[in-house]
Image 1: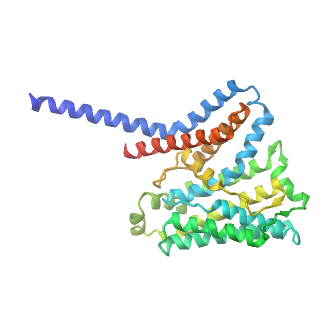
Image 2 (image 1 turned 90 degrees about the horizontal axis):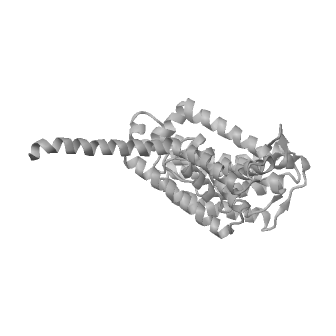
Length: 328
């Protein structure tokens, strides 16, 4: 009896496991978009101002800086790394834009500010890829180092930005769309093409999936891991450009804790913290989820401290689904 009943039991167990695996894979692939659609529908019922054009434009403007940062963070996390320094690197670029614009044109100040951010990303990459420093430790150190640079450069005093043409980058509109949103979309498109259609992009996924196998296959792992941190730094510089033009001042505290929001957007968007799985499209959706959630909580008068609870719960749920999907 036992021998004849075991195969069906094993088959049922295998079938249950297959269904579980399929369910979690489906949640990973479609759950993020479905969550965004559901959140938008619920929000429209909670407050009739939510779907107004001015409010939607406001949401897009508000999520742009974090969304841009999250694009660079996606590259890093796909390689099974982390970058805790993007907020501080953003701060360095902000004060450099402000300081340089006092004596230089935008054509000079903007490239120099972004190049400085890329240089700090390069230091991160060299430390992780060639010095063998864990990403968490290396970028945590850079978080403090870069913030110190921003304070030294400004002497702790904000630098006003008086170039009115510079303001349009963060506050203007093009064809009715906020310029920060257009900058975010351009960043998403370029990054998406790089990840999906280039050998470098495919190698980023393979490094995150199996670094040793990638190395044995001839992938220059150290070089490519360095490049992803340079990308993260450069993208932080672009986010700093939007930040500085929106606030019209270079303050050394710019970007504090933004790295946490960027990581949250990437994780909620379905990119695996274990590396090798994810996309910038998912990151964009994750950014919108966090932005829409914050917006509707503000519109309904929820206390800002309580809003942090919602954000934390959202991240935990996203990581739980991700972990179950990976095990399945």
